Image (tube, rainbow, N blue to C red; front, side, top):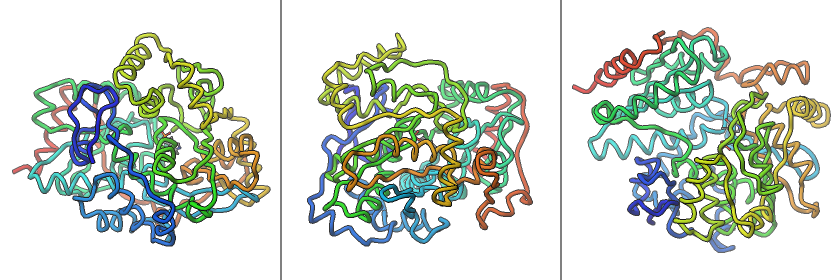
Length: 465
Ligand SMILES: *Cc1c(COP(=O)(O)O)cnc(C)c1O
């Protein structure tokens, strides 16, 4: 299978090259040249597979078959806190939470990143190469990246976080990982300062080349591919391919809901896509009235969705525009310049026929957490609650269609909001219960590019000899 860029100016390449490249050199995102599809009989034959085997099978359809997928997936999900890996929990007569948060950092990004870290390592070792991953985090993505890269032989990772500006759980999830290839730096500055430092390191061409800098950001195709299998698992469990299902996904960068759309494109009968947003509701505005205009980001109780530009939307746009790369490039360029995306009416109508958007403010989010607790005895985190509220508001008229809600974070990851809503402070799962007693290791450094680059160099050189 070959991959092409949504902007048409990058040479096609295979899965492995796309995994290492992340973004295409023309600024576009990689997508499969043709979508793999399965017949009804082939979907049925996947029923009952253990999750790692199912994930390996789906990933092989995306051209990852040169990698030892079965071993990678078994290893990636071995440490998850539930034997089903992605259990379904029924919330009412037709709504099911698909729990994606049983991984090491208690949020759904582990689902893809645990696989990606191992894929990276495998490819790099075979090529005799190493990379240094650098990233900035306001809290959550840093820990998922660290857990994905810890103890990988061909990878070093340095994560910058703003000193004293993450929650203690968030900081400890990063700083208690004592693997020798992991370095945490608390920067004396805010998150923007951390992000600017990372950008400056990538823009420092000699440094970038010397360190083999890389990122594991959410535009990497392999992350999308590794998120498709859980929608397949849930749909099959609820009767697909012989029954239609709907999905409701609390959405930020559009990666998670795009993975569900990919499953549909492969032939899985997902009939409705419900997108939940907090007050940062660019996608809901787009779907309601073809208004894709960026506004300033506002903080909310669901911080992982505090995003105004959903970078993975470009992949759907490319499809809506009939895979016209020139039109996609022009649309994205105008969006960047003008802050408003000019989507042709016909393309918007096509999107609005499949996707619907729902917006929930903080008060509504707390009310939904409370309602889930009182009606179903279910403790949901604020992101998941946006998804369940959206599912209730926009469920398909045909009640025979079950709605799968992506439960994206463990309630213990956002204990303050859950306690405010229910009076109950959700405990950390047993495997993390001693988080507050573990040894932490991190450096504190000034907001100074030269000093940070020196620290990255020292860390990456540590075992280069
Ligand atoms: C990242 C994240 C989201 C948003 O996912 P996207 O793929 O960016 O749409 C939702 N909930 C949680 C808990 C997350 O960490």
